[in-house]
Image (cartoon, rainbow, N blue to C red; front, side):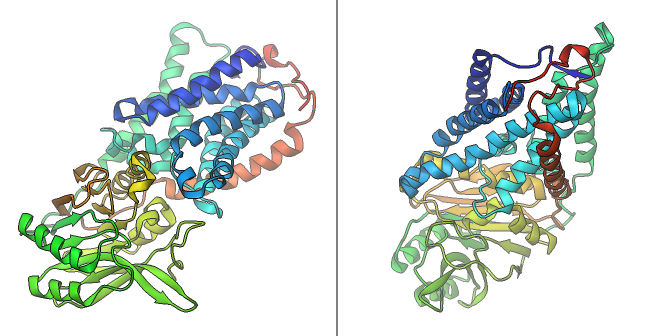
Length: 481
């Protein structure tokens, strides 16, 4: 097997590929009909591994990363000012590291070894930077490009990281060239791997669990309010019940209250015989607090509360939760998280392992952060609903609130900024949720990536080392790092 016909790329060719990678990534995130352009992004990024030096590979990867992440995450500037530049550079670093390690794999293992290693390398780095270190940040993973795609239920069994693994595997197959195949045999080889991925996805989808017969229905309603006072909350809850009298459970956003649930709101729940979930602050020693989602029952009593597991870094977001538990509601077992918690699989996976049949995320996205931030954040919950096979309720302070059915379909939503905007839907709770395949795949990829890093660092970056591609055409030494 070989990869490409030439050993290294000219600077002009690399500039064109870098521009193609940046443009296709932004287009893939522009809307559902463009999501498959994420494959073009990867198709333009991978050849940058053919740079004639490791330094050039790294810098091109870094520039591509900055041109992707800075425009998409421009709202960081409103949050962190000049600190946003450092955060953009940190995210771009991981893309640059991928390109330079990919080059090392090409040097160390040749064409076929490169093709086998790259899906593991991409997924390992993506999972590590998203889930495992202090500055973890999951947004803008390539899997999230498919969040609103009609193909999401088919893809979701792989999980968001598994989708990335498959996307890279598909793209690398297009570059893989059988040295002794020509004509029909060559094209049969090309499409065989693509067909295998499709068949596996469809077979897995056949076992996608359906809601159990007689499963309970949860009639839920929510309203968007940003930093209201208790009197405003009561007035708005009256309006919600008038508009959606059949709703059994009402949900408000994170930080609806600047403390525990006020007595005025508890009395309202008791008088109207409604369940309520709302965010507030549970005081902690040392002038600290726990960012908490409270559940008030029809007697006006707080019967359950869950602290936020992943407070936002560099922001006053409370102390992290010491444990996660499920609310044993009248409709089934429900897992609660707050805002940022939905972004992290270690948080949501634990709720599904405990038997959650639905997930509810009160969320604070302030209006001043801008519409694009709200749109990016809204990609997370549909993917989680599809991955786990459970409905998700996500009520935000200023958009974009979502009521999401099993399979990832958004059945009701509220726009940005949409103050006092109300949403309601009836959601079916399945017998149980399930974990996607990448729950095991992603950690394995991290281990493989660590091994690849060691192997390429030891033997793959020696100056003048020839590419061993299995073809004499490609046994040409690369210039020094």
